[in-house]
Length: 369
Image (tube, rainbow, N blue to C red; front, side, top):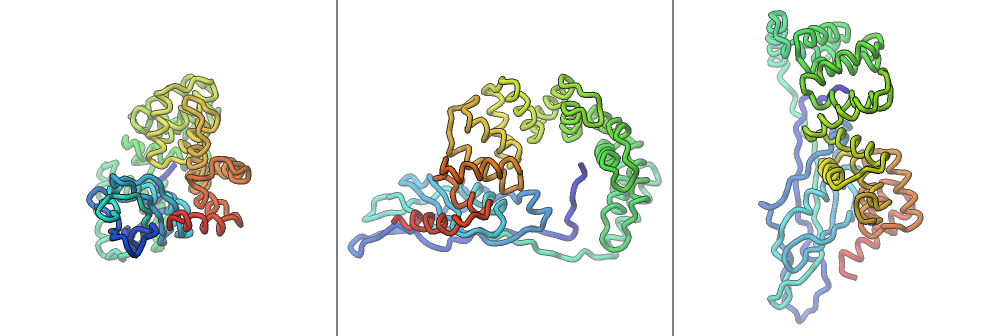
């Protein structure tokens, strides 16, 4: 329940057009390759879990561009080695628009390859500047600035330069929470609930979490909702838990949206609003939203049954390490259900021996064979 910070790290990513259209051509036919309009591309969002693990690499993807210049199909040809990065790159580039390939002057559908490079570039911070900022924060915190107290606490709790001091960190975190800082309340609740850097005290954790939730902090509302639904550290109260999830979901908190939809699915009350909420959460790459939406498509709950969509959603969640998604994906993969859309992605995630075969199939398809 506390954020991970990657100090002194900047992100760099680049898109490379590595081949032209890959369709078969004739010596007699004048052809031009599809050309991407980079102004229309949505820069892929670095998955938070991949960033936390400092994953980087290069992924090669294949896209089918139709006669209008729209992407109608896509495949992972060569993985970066990190499924989350592969999926994120594909999801971003699929939104690009292209000038279509032509044959004898007429637009035609064709496959083309592109690469996306994820790179972490480290720039060491000036120790003198860091020390100066810390002293300024500590002075402000001593004067009652709750936000500054939170920054001092985070410095003591997460420093990697030898100045880490959990005892001082938790002291300043309590000071920030006492000063009314909702983020500090939520972080303190996380440490108390987990027994990290201080003695575990779930009752006190919930008290701080409730205060943060009352102040409108969506993440605290979502966590409190989940705790009330499970009875973990609190008296089980499904009604109150749902109320907190609704408040967080209304703030577009993706985990709350997924949890709320999962609750409604268990009750058999999934409606169009629930599906729309799940789609928005899945669009923000929330693994649980991918899983719940996959269940809906696999079972035909609230949507038309679509095993290919279920397969693709499970692949995305499995790439993030979701255990349920991995089990469901393995089951669909082994049974050959829903494979066309994300076979290579699934093989990459699952590490199956079929990955090589799937890669060859994707390459042949990309080459128009």
